[in-house]
Image 1 (spheres, one colour):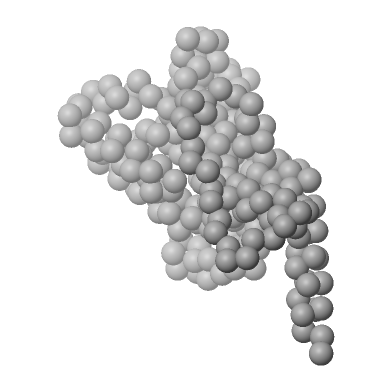
Image 2: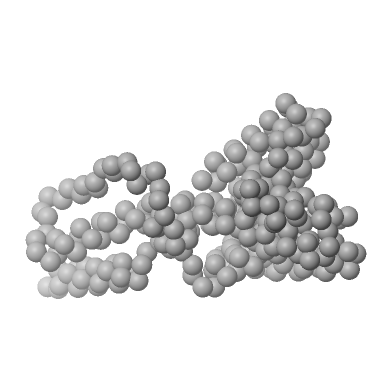
Length: 276
């Protein structure tokens, strides 16, 4: 999923720079503005702005976001699963855009616009710091620090920038959407603290993939268990397949209890087998 997201961002950047390098109509069409709040027919821009970046020759905007996404996002995707990660990433883009637009409007700014995945990428940094606080990261690719220190530095930097922007009458002059960063940060923290699962939340939504017939998982064993053991084994196989598809965070409480019970039964059988 990380590779797909990076590819989309890079392709949009290159197409805009190669085929519309003067007017940048592609980037302008995808960008979100303060006025988008009151134009429901343009609400899709709260998602598309996260896949557009400052046009060339400003390469650092897209390069910086994609590097952070590549180096930190992979562990977050492995932690939550590809499907959950995609939902999480898109949700942070939307929330960051909404927070930015609302705060700009409250300050009386009407003509500002924003592009970039920074809000979602900042959320990825915070999730990394919360999930792996003691891992060592290179701040600015130079200074080795624990992940929790890097996360704290990012939050304080964005908070200080937002406070300074507010005192100056908005972020438009600074060209940095600190409020979007803080929006992504807030969503990431709440997501981690409350243990949300966006996959479970959207499991009832209509999807084209539900119309396709999926092959059943077949497990071949030389001596298949019988009775209750057989039913438990089949349920465990189903749960393990779900973890592979959607990540550990997608499991319900009942499914977690099933795995715990299966683990205890396996341990008892192993202990009985080891007895002389």
